[in-house]
Image (tube, rainbow, N blue to C red; front, side, top):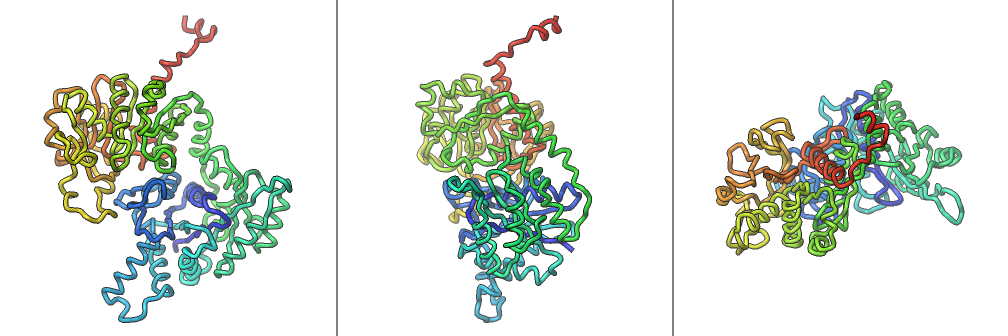
Length: 548
């Protein structure tokens, strides 16, 4: 029978429940177990698709088109499995399902209540992932124990243990052990109170993961064990790590996966962490500095571009490059060009986004990078502004623009997709999920992917206007990838440029630490080559003699 692990958090948000759950998933998979993951989010939005990135960070899109929480990105990157829209359930989606069932008459006229109807729907979402080909489902409960919003979720996971059998459920509680400077000691009271709050909801944690700035004293582990009623070996310390890729190794050394396997009667086969240790080694050995500017609209909140950042890190580790990210607001581009800040970059990423703000700055950056041979990768909106830039400054189409930005533009080189024209609802209605593209034989993108047929995930309403495609033909601007029916331009590139490539897709969503996304891998390679040209390696005397 499928085993279930529930991860809750207390004391404070942003302690790292998602990374802890992801790391545990990696450790269990390294033991040969089949793992999937899920996030239960307490907010009332049906999904994060309509939320401001400043509110929520990036929207992570699954293969099947789900607009989900960014923690699913951590899950996929760590366990290297494609999840589905069913891996993210919000209060809004759960209540929507319950109310729809009531309207259909499914409850036979009964009064609809939080218990049992809402809690039953939550349990149904968890059970839906327990397929025959899954050994372990790890479910993270968003929010913090004590929040009123998560009470139905806590009640549901309490009941779940009774439904499937106590031997099939493990509760892990993540808490904080702060260091109080004036007292010069770490304090366990927040952990005690958090566990007490969780127990008041009928859940006794099996394992307590203690977040701390520095390793906690063994005596504190014993104190937490005694006061929170868990074995001392089930008190796991997750102190601050050098990088997020260190976290699975830290938790393994603390015995987290071993204790989980003991509690659930899972395999005691030691995990094979060879590939992961190699990754950590490559990350730490990646020291050659490469400066990459991310020119975006939401740069004040890096989580808005979390998958982009991680994809750059994956590619950096692959090439031994320490990618130094320069966050540049698109609205500040004119000043950045004047100061030389963009000139001094080794590469530029123009990420996705919506709306008018910052678009002109992105267009200016795309023009400068095209004219000055700076490696540039455009993602979604990035492809669109690169297209607009070339139309204006290379093709002479004065006033060319995206119809999203300027509905009255004389040259709408970017236009709304035909099947989006009559769409009124904003949530879940874009072109979402994985779509196949055919790449032009001999093109740069075909060489990068090593194939002429690729699949990437999408999230957009606007596209390259096919009415203008003929105007680009015969120029250095190449529409190098298209949809199988030839209607949609999915990739563009520039001849006679080291790397000036845009894609309507979001390849960052499929990048993995041990397998970087191809476009990011080659973009960082081009950026590193530029950095090496700008900072030539000084040959040591013995090297010079060896060459001779």
